Image (cartoon, rainbow, N blue to C red; front, top):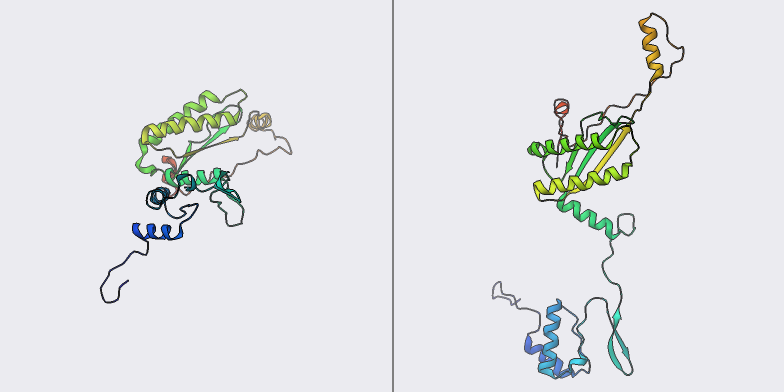
Length: 255
């Protein structure tokens, strides 16, 4: 900065002629630019060759990881080594590349979760599918799309479940792939889709039937009937679950 001249800034970097004078004064046998973007390194290497007569074979334009082997007989490029940034979390553990990619994906595209609660054995949906969106779309403004997703989920459950053995991992992968396609077709975005399937209950219920018959006939039921386990009330996530029955009971938010 020049005092008394106002907001005038003079670059601290050397100009073209300054580089020529420096290289000529040093008269190096080998030359390797090391600072700046790669295209700047190339330009500086060309300067050394054209203006200062440094042989092209003695000029090294290197990228991160390139190895220069220097021996009494000379210098040459000699392969590469792994380089790059390493990310650590709060505990000091290294964060893998896969985790970083997922975090970047969620940051740019968001997350879309569907939760299905089905009856074990029959495959019947116990509740309307829950849909949770984070950083993707505002559910209250996307009723038509959510209706399409919900309809698809009901049809998928009807086709995939029932009185037959199923592989939940296979069903989840199919849900993830197909929902991803639907969302991309409608929004041109690809959030991370996470399907969750909860199987509850089961068939049977003979003792309960016996108690019902005994009650109708005025007879006492078994002394120590096995009480069926009660499931806790469904937890409503703190986001907009597109379920009309829930909207009147809780105020939800979506991001």
